[in-house]
Image 1 (tube, rainbow, N blue to C red):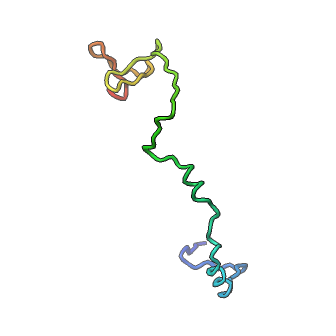
Image 2: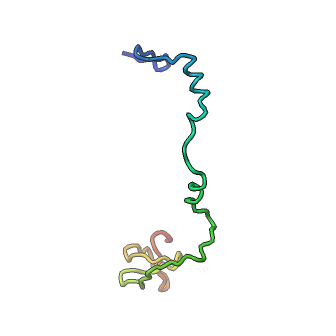
Image 3: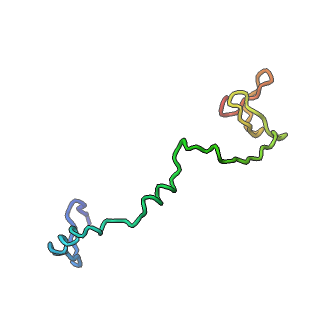
Length: 97
């Protein structure tokens, strides 16, 4: 059976609100309001370019491992499985080759 998707849908169980009820909802000023403290919301946001000079960053740096190499083009440390070519002693990764 073919279905006409452009035809308006009718439902027998559909309840239509009265015009007075719709007007009372529209006049209710607090119906669309969200209870949120703007100051609390603003404090939780981290702005780009914020002064982080008082913060301390602790990172553990490991030396290059035996199965790793440094790409001569992008200078990233990669696994030996990503070696694409070696030219004059310089090793290039598959992303830069």
